[in-house]
Length: 489
Image 1: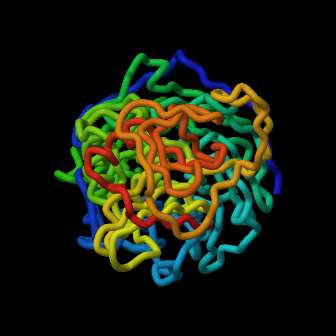
Image 2: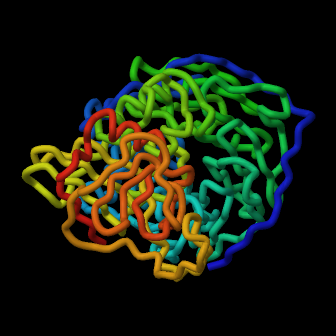
């Protein structure tokens, strides 16, 4: 395995681009997801599954260009004029599947999961994975080397991981943007990377033929995938709204709005370079803080339905929604980023309702391993809030009230307690800090609002939630005096 994080080139000039804009953001999906495939130019749709357990996440054309595979987030494979070699549809996965890549022979394929796990089928051989490794952001794409004796994995931060005979040509530095796809050259001497705004990064022998930022184009829908032309002198990008963007010698053969309630998730090219397919699925779109629109509203509605408090359900991705996303990512063991990448969006669309350990009665659970507060009424989870418990780091500080030296271990006590004291308004000051509208459950430990609730445990021992979340708790009477509080790891 070869790892690296060097900078590729992202150029801004000399491109020709054909752009078609459509706006059709996805609605809320639940236990099943419909899908569709559209063909343009020299190809026509060969079909798509009508009802599937989880949303489609990728598609790949067969090497002969006469068919394609579609893959869902649970690893279910749907073959159209393409051979079936197996799937992970009946397995319990640690992380959702994110991409599929066929071998050069067309007699096998690999699938990659968001945690970097790799699954091989047919004549595809296993050359390694990132499964079990700590990733900054999830894996989003998989691509085969020209010989089929290796492959690349691409993470959302632009990190490239190469296995077998796949050569490493570079990766993007942190902070450059969220990348969504990697397109290798058939010669094996380079690759392109695509980000969700249509930026194009070139590495090795891959030529630059233009990008959306370089043309001053701001896509209506986030770019989700790309494919190179057979000559390697152009490429095609596709957005969630069905917009198709062609560069270099790529032929623009049309674009189509995905059916109502669906988003476009992939593009695959015809062997003759004169056409392409796009795939769509019922699902939710990726989003990040600062975004606004119906796609954000759909995410908020679904998170609220699951019990993750988002604040105002208003279509704006603000601080409170970021906290809800963080709580969701903590609960379902995803990367804790506050950003809804497509992996998170797919899981939000299909995740089962969160369950507490308690199955009867009313209780408040503090899960220290997940760093969330779970509020239960009648055995049913009604709310999940982002939280931060004791940092586990000993402290020595000057007390805010006593002005004397205060020492201790920042540990949140575990066990069964109950709310015995509360402060209904304003800040309650202690030696160790300011507590917003606290609900005390044992000694001086409380569930309280605070200005900082990070992705990790950081408090002196109390259970922090945001100021807004604490106001929500009071407004809904979710932690009444006397209610049981169960703290566990």
